[in-house]
Length: 102
Image (tube, rainbow, N blue to C red):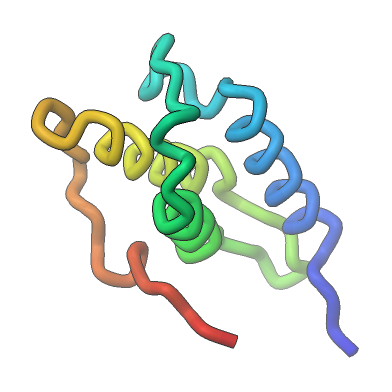
């Protein structure tokens, strides 16, 4: 049975940690307290989907771009918090927003 690499597992763990302790991508979120936005389960679901959809791995299963995946998820969170004032650049590609079902 195939399992996630330790690189992927570690990236997911750190991503969840940064969300939970309020330090997700400070250059995008700044000092915004985004806890109230995370009460909507679909916001958190979409953030994890974006993170997973953007991750790129090498042939050995090592994550190549967790910083980019984290940034894109943070942009979604910021847009969810500030719907009228924040513009996501570049705009999300359809594959980034897909919600895959098991």
